[in-house]
Image 1 (cartoon, rainbow, N blue to C red):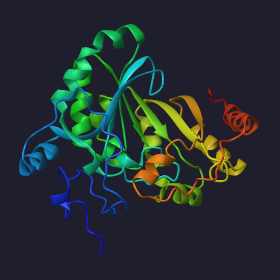
Image 2 (image 1 turned 90 degrees about the vertical axis):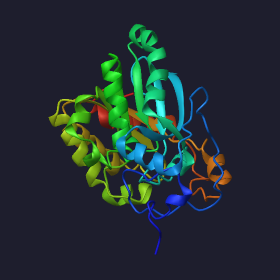
Image 3 (image 1 turned 135 degrees about the vertical axis):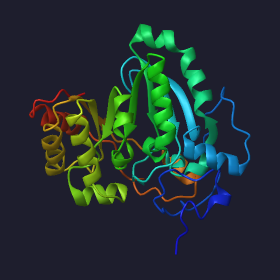
Length: 297
């Protein structure tokens, strides 16, 4: 029987808030990217880290960076949290799948960093985006970051697959201005093949967001031979068109720039021979979304 994350506690910096009983990713335990430069890392002992993580005071952070108009409008500080329930075949950051690959950082430390860029956010119309991995693996930590950012008057966004949408409380939604919702497939079988999980939770979360009036940017990764089938794209487009708060759809052409990370981690990359989609295919897919009245990039 595969041990749960909690049973493996001695190998982790702390217990994940959402325990899915996922197996360890095979291969090396080497962290291929740290990306926490400039942040003070927690030096609390293991038992104290458990306590702080459950309270949302401490989180497992993979990396952070400043980006422009990528993870939301304006200049944004994007915090990539460690831990993800999905194992997407095209993931370019598989080193974010396990929480133990991250670094222990307090919410206060990250909020202090965020506060430094408040003027830049104001001028550019930017803010913070909490990504991953999957941010809703650490809902208490995310809730604290979102609320702290809103108290600073900063625009907030989360980048999520929606699979753990049930972990996002109404109070958390009140502190979210924008959701970048990754709809990876419109077909249940394709979604399962792509992620190893079920599609329905994403659909449910999108509908809940729309009912709450939350702005949504939908993201769809276009992978030849995997997600590019006309009927699969049509299913995604039909679903998205039912969500009145979607303001844009981003069609993201597949690339295999993350392949080296898979190899470093001792993992098999199944899309080695997959080429990026041609411009004609990208145009066709964008036209499918536009045909539903959606603003597409």
